[in-house]
Length: 145
Image (cartoon, rainbow, N blue to C red):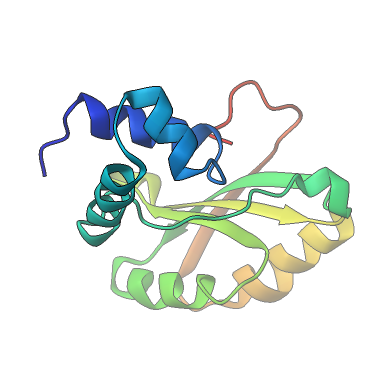
């Protein structure tokens, strides 16, 4: 799908604040509200906009430990492991990576004890999981949200 400057501006404004009204966007880009509504619908239908969501500050809800976990897997088990990881509430994001990297997980938990339980009782018990490297996030430098 080819995006023009209007689409790009709409997307930028919605990324800054997904609750922004179509009227406000229309005024900013010099188009009518109906035009903006149609364009947003098209962006959704084409899969450019995947979803509208709320981003929660984990610290405000007691989730004080965030970790990046690299998981080496047996190739034949990687898809099964990924399917299981999708069921874990602790995992916010998960990626298959190229080369020897395996899987990369972003995990949020209440405390170090909960992180240890996740690593030992959940992740560590999956068939095909090899080496696991855990890095605890100390501070956000730049975040998408």
